[in-house]
Length: 569
Image 1 (cartoon, rainbow, N blue to C red):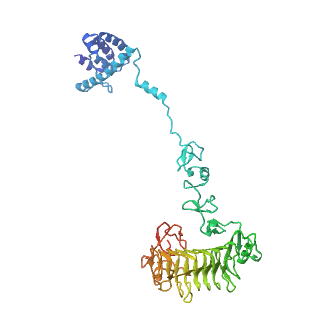
Image 2: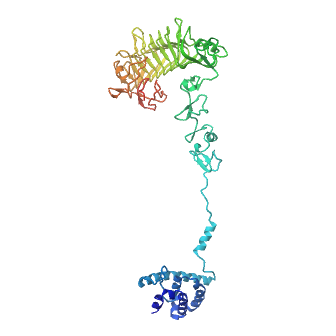
Image 3: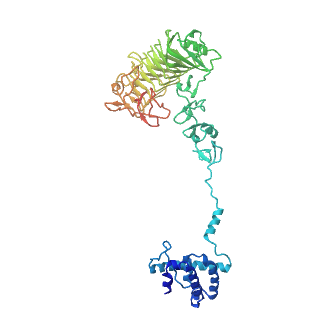
């Protein structure tokens, strides 16, 4: 009956009176002895009454219902969203209210009892604790990666991003480029692709001395290997340095008033002989000179380098052809104890040898010895290095080396030398001379005794990655101690591994028709890959490109075409 009076009452009439009714019901029930056993002793009830009077006004309607339940009453259910009578099932409502009442009663009892016992405020809440925490906690950003000035290196940074910019570690591209690299390491002063390197093709200022050239692949300074890498001066193949620009002589027979020239670029000499004469002067002889000879044919009585001199004779903007007019003299002769470098020089139509070397050192590069009456080269007690050159159609043989010293032939054509009445055709090594032939092509040479390679009381002979095929089908190698390996060879006395046996008739199958003594290899034979495509084995120190400049398979152990040519890419 009581529940119907309170719980079912019209909300508009009861809503305002509920707090009063709840307080009266609570006070009367708290005074009841039987109910006091459930909610507490009489003393507790009196204390609670005082507390209730001071706090009940601020309680919300659900909290009032909780207090009523604690005193033995029944909470009122109200639809706060509509202000109308609740349609909730009584059973569900009572169950839900009872659960909430139990939880909240326990909380309130503990809080109120503690508050009255200790005499402290019961208004302490989670909100106060959170507020205190928020007050003492500061919000901070991420610490900077580094602290150095912008563009400067910082030890706190990773080696891949060693520079500091606005507190962040960056690479040289994100910093000050070359200047940042200079500050980091003077040995790697150039910024390339975000990394500090020694040099680039556009900035090789760090290169010099015996490493004057920047290698694009490694971005490091290396020694020169071609005259073109040194500008107007020559490359010293012995140590990788470039000749000094202070010692350059120019020769141009077509220049106006060259007969009164002084050898400068503006006033060149008319003849090579004039350049040699100037170098032979006592004050000039100790220097290493570059003689640049303009394109043309220089027919002079004699071309003799001064004894004890160091000269690089280079054709300028093309081949310079030298020829002597005196019977019995070679096209070019070295004075004793001299050093000669060549580049784009053609020694042709000499009455004897194209080049004669005596007790000297010759670096014959990118040049030609052809159509001379005797040998292309005759050396006596010389060290001779032939690279990227053509030795062809010399009547008595291509290269004849005698006595102490070494003859090293690399990336070179030795073709169509000698004849049926000459003693040898391609190469002769005798009287202790040491022979080395690498990535070279010996084809079509002929001789009454031996066509391709002849050794007479010679030193060691090593032929590797080459093509050795004589004009006839007979074995064209007569070199008792020769070691021939990874080469195409037509037989003869030899030792070594990886060789491919050939005959004279194979030349037409595997090579194009020769042009000016050059036999270029075919990539395909009868529409199939050439049978000699993987005969040669590249080793460290071998040339990375062929006679024409086409790249080889330049990695250790890579198999490639033998000889001076590979098919164009």
